[in-house]
Length: 158
Image 1 (tube, rainbow, N blue to C red):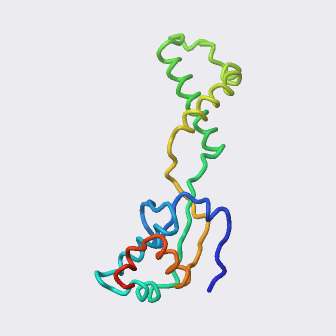
Image 2: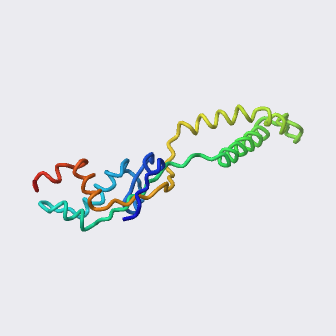
Image 3: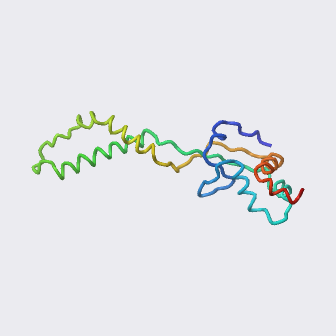
């Protein structure tokens, strides 16, 4: 068996998956293993045998990506460009003279604008995730996890 990943990144991940799902929903390795095994289970089957047959079970951990500084910097530039252009078109000198929105004005306001943008983005839900770990569960490990996580699966067999 491959050495289990004991990293904090795996344990602290946001989502887990045993396949190649297009949407991540399982919030624990147990939930991911459960979803994986449900595909193979039939009423009255020997759950332990199913787990043994389909082990080892690989669980991939995913964490939400952080919004990076480069993205924030591009948005700040976009906001500044739109404000300068729209102000000039709507309120600026029709002859194209100086409207007062010089680079110095934006430089002075950039920290305030950045703080606003960080606050707004901080309230959003980031759904883009990156893989942060992989853990492989041997049959005995998966069996123990499922006995604790889904004990009702084993009640009929006992």
